[in-house]
Length: 116
Length: 313
Image (cartoon, rainbow over all chains, first blue to last red; front, side, top):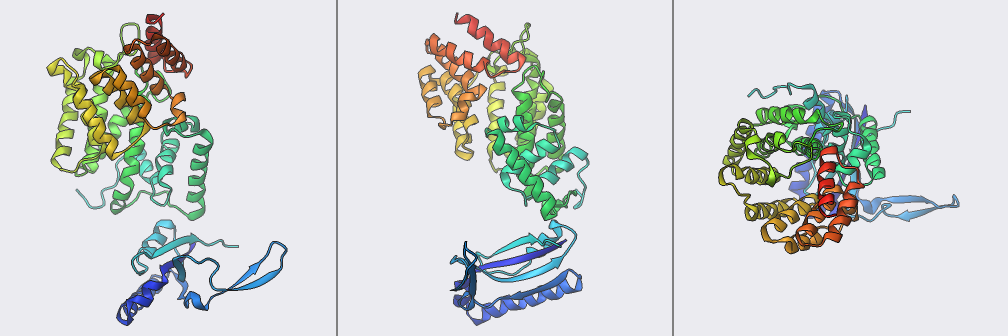
């Protein structure tokens, strides 16, 4: 099955963390990606730029569209990156999801992907 | 013990599978009771004190999650046991409650009695360093040891404090006491240890000839602090009634969580009937007994309630 790991973290944590802490997390992501690639479970994944760069396309009830500056919801934690993996089952997915590096308070949502 | 020792029992294995931490906590025990023990949705709703619609939704949602999210139906590795243990214990506790509330074992859960004894014992062997696992095994033994004394010659239920102690199973009580001693030795208290201690306090009447009601109230206070719940509050009210008199018991019953569902819950009506009778309020006692009898109690409980009803005229 394919699963997407959606990484939610308080954005402020990175702003406050400083360069060294940031590089440590990036290093952990690279190491995890390498391991997942070796084990042939990784299909894709990337970090996203900050929510200050986000633009949301909103479709109204009448079908009309408008643009909104920012993420669709102003929450404390924001979607900051994702992994796409292919593994046997949820336990295997959770095994990898637990290894995704996040700052304290970070969350990794594991979602099975619909295959059409 | 081997790090990867498998769970040597098909039913216990399935319970561990159903208690997957990816399922909602309130669904795990319900699902495993449904799948492994075959309890009906209606019965589960009663056991968990929720409506049937809500229970059906819990089960449906859990099954949909298993299918949709790819939850494996496999034996979890030993490292995954601790995070499932709470729901596994809850499953055994509720299965046990089903047989405990049926003194004559006349209902459709009758075969659970030996099964819960067996499974709780097996779990205590598999996880010997968890005090709550040991305490649940002790609790089940303490309660089942009294099984032969729970019916009178007419087949009516006999309340624990009126039972003939000579009919209690001394060997099983000793087994339970050893388990509870080991649990206490691990120096980490918990709700199953409190529950086992409450049963143990009732059993102490074998030696002393008296039920230590004040101790039992104190144990219920401790249990309520750890795990608040309507069932515990009602049982505590009965103990308060016995220790401090019916007025105090009725006050405790009134202070129990104001959950309307309790009115349609047999133990609540039975507790109220007994407390009202002790207080000399025959009319209220009769009303509570009629309400209890209308809730289709198991045969032994029905005979007991009918006896009380006749006594009140």
